[in-house]
Length: 126
Image (cartoon, rainbow, N blue to C red; front, side, top):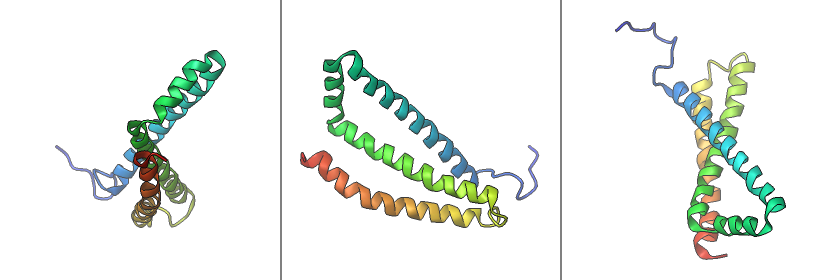
């Protein structure tokens, strides 16, 4: 199998995984928004069905799903800024790996602030 010259392809490095994660989180956010629009529109069709769906959203399983949603939005937002900097800042490509670590740090700090309060609401009954 021929090998690519060093530095020309991500080949499993941080940039490739950042690219994959950015696309996956984008698709997940798109599907959430699609479901959100559809369930909100349900109120015009059948208020009883809408109330049933909203009741389902108050379950712990959906509460844990919200953790995934917030994680996807946080990573996608921070990484999107990194992508814009790589594309439009003359030094962006040089610092793309460092910026990825900054993105991951911001993501961890954001989730650390969100998780305790959210999980108290999900499992504490408030």
